[in-house]
Length: 343
Image (cartoon, rainbow, N blue to C red):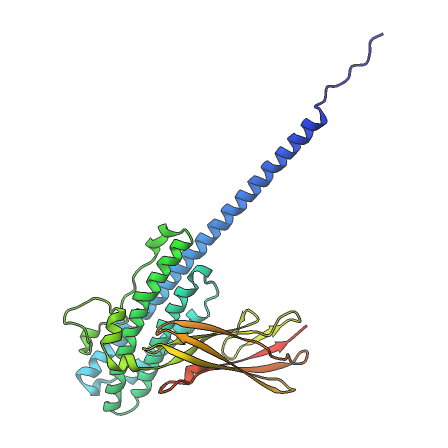
């Protein structure tokens, strides 16, 4: 009688090793595939930011070179040709460009320093053009003085872009392993042709962008100007825009992160910052100090220790930086918004 034939099977250990090998292989494919996708996404985000920043700076330079330049040249040649309406439009455009850059939602972590430099330059241009528009409604002498000061502010903004923003961007590309993407980084134009205005402090015929050394030694008014500005405020890690609201959940810690920009021509030491939270129960005011801010740079300080308000209560938040001694423009020293205490 024949014995029943049994099917041959692999030993259990071999089967187990084969299964583990297949599992490891599948995990490797998933891991390297995901890593490749993340790397591609990061590369796309960086390129998107660099091209967007270039577009922002190009638009800003267009306001100066195309919209404002002709108006100022005409006013220098003949004060009767002063077009206050054109200057108002330029002031609106520079302020709008500054605010849009300030609210940029996607800034790669490697570019945070570069982004602050760009915002600083745009903020200087916005403040200077706004002051010029205000002076355009006065007498000729006041406008001439304001124009000379404004030109120095524009030159400082060019210094910040050329000597700080561009190197910081190149460094960020290198740190992120995207050195080959330097081709996406273009050197922006100066805000305007200062030679055409007859107010340039540089050598005749020079088309070179001003350097940090030019800014520090070319003008007493530039080196002595002092101005700080609240650049941005975050509440529990979320941005608080002027006049806007941030809703806090029960697990959110009421910590404010305040970034202050030095728009002046000299380093600022011991810059005071104060945050006031007005709840139904009480008015809470907590101070902080920023030890030092270099000209054209930004520094951030955290303020914590507030007692939260009641559930579903909306409380006003008032953030103030400075004022500092001899500061002329205090309008940008304050940012006001609200926080709502949710579940």
